[in-house]
Amino acid sequence: MTNFRKLGRHAGHRMSMLRTLVSQLVKHERIETTVTKAKEVRRLADNMIQLGKEGSLDSARRAAGFVRGDDVLHKIFTELAYRYKDRDGGYTRLLRTHFGEVGDAAPMAYIEFIDRENELRQSNPATPQPPQRVPLDPWDKSRLMKQVAPPKEEKIFDSEL
Image (cartoon, rainbow, N blue to C red; front, side, top):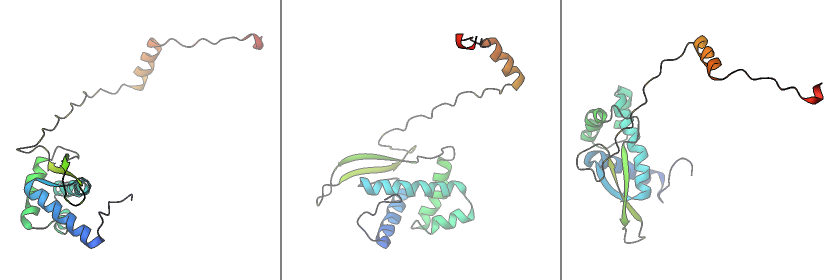
């Protein structure tokens, strides 16, 4: 179980379901599903946004082979790629809602894109980066270290006398 969750479905059904969920997430920007499905969709949706940010022909073909619909593909490569051009990852948010499904009472969750209109919860502002320090010349650094810490004195033990 290191690669992905099986979700109780065979491979073809699982990939078909995940492709549909990712396409609907891109189209509507928020969907409600079970927590385990949402965790798998999060991985795949973040990969699609990365492809959109690359913007190459190869990434467009790879995304077109996964998502369903030309409108979804266009939205990934225009709107979402522009929205997340300065963000390095973490494009989606998972919000647990309730225990919902009638058959098994599976925990339900919203999965949504962050930094959009009508969010359920606002995203945290980006943490400011500390100012860049100018690297010291090795000679200046060694002179500063001598000023801060005096040289160690050697201790003479009685056994060495």
